[in-house]
Image (tube, rainbow, N blue to C red; front, side, top):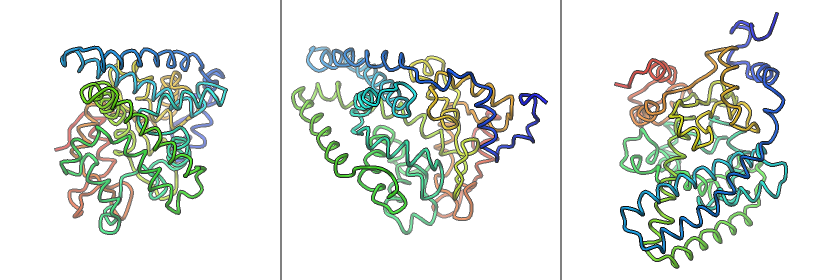
Length: 363
């Protein structure tokens, strides 16, 4: 029997190894090779960004011209950061030095070093996505609010908590997550296995921060606002509208990392897919982290043929609205139920999936 005609029962969602192996067999060999042109084009953006920053900071432009230029700068920062994300997954260059270079230009605006990113995202998150205690980016559980100050803070800034901070937190959330891993998570026992030179990366982070502060001082308050602060805010928001919908509507687990269950993609505008390098194809990225997102649509196409239930793609705007409508804590009894601080309201991730795929909104 041709494997492309296998029934969904023969390749169930709870057998990620078989699903991934079959997908790998169906994909062309070039899908698993680095795509250096993406890195070259991205690095070519850097002098453009520098020139635009100079024009915004010292060009004497009126505020109504500076504001859209700040937004454009923020989208460039986002794009270069996403290219750095690909590069540090080994999907762009074969050269470690070029990976490091694009990692610095992509993540330094977020105050994240390449070493911190590899430890936080590549090692910790990708090895244990949505696994309790092991994923530094997972939503907390209800009992954690009573015992962990960090969990209370994370819940307050998370969409769905109802706290006022949750409505403005996306403006710096990604940068804050990077700092949280560097200064807090990496010292926790469950992350001691992560390869991270803590002293080196903390020192480099301080130096990067001081460098941006010095540049902002040279630009002056107005120039720093439009050339540095607002682009960082726009870039954080741009990343978080994807990141928050990738995992925080999905089930959590105690020990099993299964991208066919714990990760979702979003269906967004084609212009955003082009601008943000197919980052909306996040489930596909977790299936094959070292694959260029250029081939993510092909992965989705084959996955839907193998098992439609294994492919989770939410309408982007509806997923964002759902984040703020559903509670933001996992139940203490299972990873499939989200609850409020007092246990109510409660909704299962299965119900959220049904409502999103049925294009309904949470009442």
